[in-house]
Length: 192
Image (cartoon, rainbow, N blue to C red; front, side, top):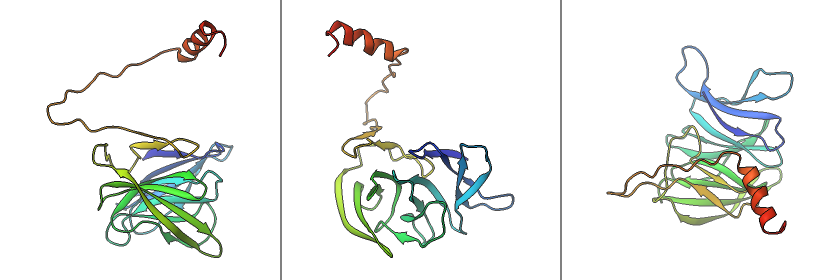
């Protein structure tokens, strides 16, 4: 079981993992950060469900599932009863939220990152899908955790770049006490 997401309000940790003894399918669970630390099923079907991401307003969960025979991105209410809606077309997965009405995901058939604008009413509709950029230079990773992130304002992405042929791995740079370093540099610049 891996942690895939913390809700923005800090009240839930979303994980995916095996549903139970004797079952091989994965489901998505939510664990409250409050007094009740029990694991609650957020999305549980006979299919595989992974990489659940909760909308910034806490109302919806986007997730990857193979229920139709190939991986797709779906949407349903988070921790309440309701329907289920298909967001992607073709093979897709690893959804994240750019805003409370826009989900981004990796489209496996086109090798690109796609943004889906959503409209909410009695049903959920995908109003528009926009290809943002090609995903091939970036690390696809697995279904269990996104290998990228979206800034809170939905305008920037952080992704791991794949090593090119002949390129050597670069050692990471680790900065300890980075906040003190920022304060020192701010003081040097006159507090700007």
